[in-house]
Length: 328
Image (tube, rainbow, N blue to C red; front, side, top):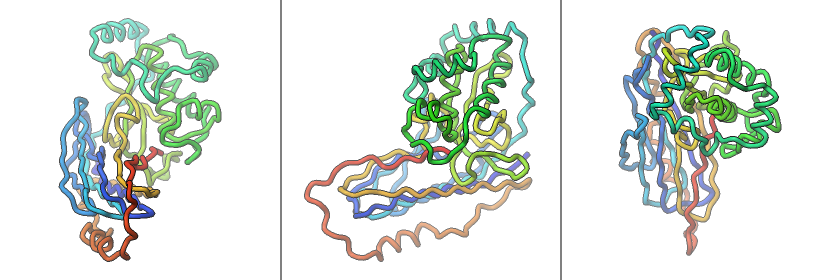
């Protein structure tokens, strides 16, 4: 058993004061399968009232509205998560698993994880790529998933900032490089073409030097889960060529990134914004106390209040989208 303490800092800095911010967050780790969220806290500056609910997939969602004028928005999510070891995943299943999978799919419970979605849909470059890799049904579903996981790892270079948060999969396919968000979307689109229900997982990865992970340690992470007979949902991480382990901490699941962004919101004002994100994941064999070495929200609120007097707001403020966090 392992315990993970997670601190996720997000800061939006505006070039001029904005008159309102509305934000929705998916930072609260799930409690299911081998994972249990023991504690979660969310601090926001400027101060506001935070509401929460759970969506139809069991994701924990928090949201708030800051109606007053402000020039920065700071969000700190802190979690303590307990992880039980996952059962070892075999290398293959019996070939009859294809027909068993088809029978499961025919029940109609997983259609939304089979249909094309915003970031995981068939395109001409994807079809050409699937043909190049000979992605067709053969052997058994699990063998295909292991193979596809390793082929994507070998084919694509991991290059931070080579794509954007809203880049279609064609950008990574045609350039041969991307980040975990791109690789997860490509794998989802290919796996769904095989008739295997597949979903996007947003969360964190505890990095260790021994594992030589390619993904960035100071950002959120993304991987996929595929539904298999007898095994249920099995995670695959094409960025690092891994089957998901107890190092993978699940925050939210969905059809693709559009369903599970860590932050999603809008602000009102004629101004530009800068997004800063810092993530830290610490592991221990005993339940640790959450760190307190970063400034508490009261300090950030005070700093905002002490800022120089802002210029008068524009006559006609605009409603704009907050920058989204690309998963690395």
